[in-house]
Image (tube, rainbow, N blue to C red):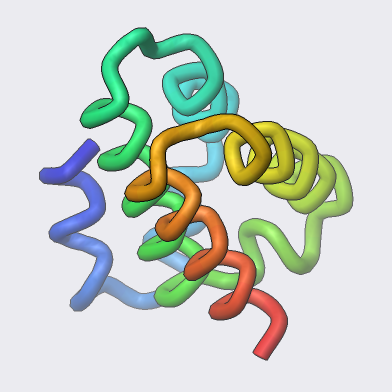
Length: 96
């Protein structure tokens, strides 16, 4: 997750969308099912980087935005502070 998030800065938004969008179900699954708070934190950071560099992945597809909001809300309510911070940061980036 960290490696993927690290390469978001560089490729075009279209290239990121093309390569990453098929992996969204797996990414959201990692956020929801990982027992490790560090994995959830890294996954939340990946999502925030995706929103920063390729916002159309979420903003142009209602099902992706819905997953972002539903999964994010769950983690903001009950996860570790680092994960909550990453989720809130991704929401801020998406809606600014």
